[in-house]
Image (cartoon, rainbow, N blue to C red; front, side, top):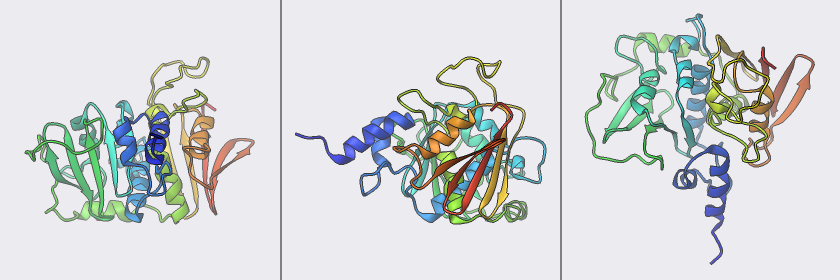
Length: 288
C-alpha cells in the first residue's frame, strides 16, 4: 500500500527537524505541507517573543536579555511546532522550564507564561496569558503530554495568577512588530534544532556545529558572549558572536523544503538579510 501524503511529509520533516516520526507527524499541516510555520496567530506571537528571549543575551536588562532565556542554548532541545501549540522536547525538561517560567519573585522567564498542568515526571503544559498560546516542554520523544497530573517540583506561577505589574512593564517594552516580522522571528525560534540532511547547514541549538566543520570557532561548543535581537515594525537586526554560521541560519529560513515560503536571502557587504514581504531580518555575526 502506498505511503500516505501525511506520513511522507512527516518523514521528510523529521529529517530536517530531528523530531521522531510521531512528533513530526503531529506537526504536519492540513494540506500535508511540512507545517513548521503554519499556526494560529497567538502561536506566531508567542514564538516571536520566545525568539526575543532566546536571542538577547548580555547585561541590558531593560530588554528581553533580562528574561535570562539565552541560557536555554546550553541544552539540547528539539523544537516541534504544531498548529495550536509549541512543543520543546528535551531530556531535561525541569532545567528548561526553569529558564522559561517567571518565578514569583519576578526574576527571569517569559512574562505572562503560566503552568497549566504538570504531567507525570517530565511534562509541563503551559499557557501564555497575553497570547492565550499553549506551550509544552516534555521528555516524551513524541512530544505528546503523557502521565497523570502531578505536583510541580518548583513553585511557579499557575493559571490563577494574573500578570504582575513587572510583567506588564516588560511586555510593554517589547517593540511592535508586523505580521511578516513575527513570522521571521518565530521561524528562527522554530529552527533552533534544524539541520540539512545533506549536511549543507545546521543550527545546533545556537551553541555548537553538529557538522563539526573546521576553521571557524576555537571552541567546539560556545554560547558566545553576546547576542542581541533588536528592531521594530518591519525592520529587525540580529547580532551574535558564536554559532550558528550566518549562511546556515539564512539557509534554514529559505530552504525549499523546510524554509518559510516567500523568504529570500539578500547579501550586503557587511551582512546577510532575510526578507519576507516588507519585513527584513539582518544577520550580523562577528564570526561571519
